[in-house]
Image (cartoon, rainbow, N blue to C red; front, side):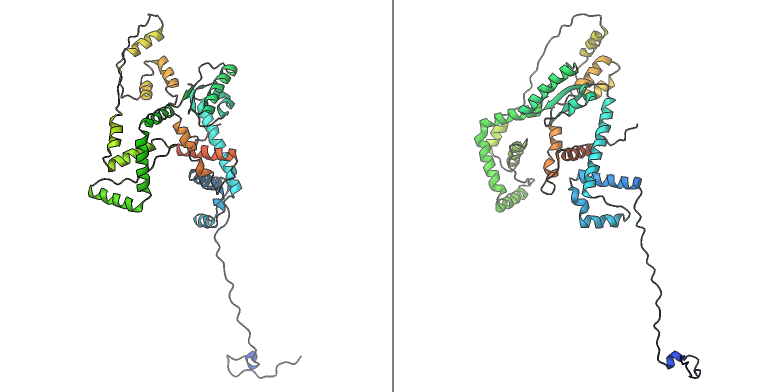
Length: 375
């Protein structure tokens, strides 16, 4: 190998490589990457976040697949990069677990109740009879007047009497349903007038021009504009709202005649009760109670709570029987949102999952069953 025979460079800055036109590229400094911490949350912290997602999905009736939506995942990663989002199958299991936990807590609370328990239902179910601690305390079941529910109430009464010797259980029909049926039958008397009102409201509602003219008329007459609506047979009070709306707009003489003929009546009933004398202290308690003046404005449950020491026996009876629901409307409202839960997006929910979603939603809205039960 021949060594370079060139003389040393005359200038201090020159080198042999420069003499031979040899260029060595400069080495760049290594880049330091600053990645954020991506360690997932421990199990306890993740459980809190999973529960929050479950509550949001159930309460807003979101499809389970929303957790796999790309934009949802991006949003969650911005909010909390350490949170690992569960998939839709895991969400389903979490919702069922939430349902079972709340149901267990509710059962635990019911076991602590010393008085009787009353129920309301909107479907044929064996839930009451399957829970022994509830069946023994069952006092009443309130349902609508559907034939299957009437048979259900009769079967439950027979079952409780046979298996549990429960002779006090009774089935009651929803008073709101009975009143609604009576009103519907009464409206048949003025059915033709209601049909005419319905046709007029339908014409106004389906015409943009008429709606605009009606809105301008309300401004001139300084009236509140109400959106025209048509009654729906399955929607209670919808006919009343339809008639009230058109009455506020027009002095419709037919409707005036309908409402003027419907007056509130008070029926006064006086009765004398003769009680046989008895040495029983319970009899004396009844006698003292009947001697009190009647106040229609008082809240019954609060009154009995306040006077429980004064009337110990009667207050226990009041606690049992005043808890009987007069209507099943609340239960029906809880399940009327099923159309928002079982949709085209999530139309393959099994009955158990649908029940878990609907019941959990109702319990969340009413803050029921969320307290963790002590073991």
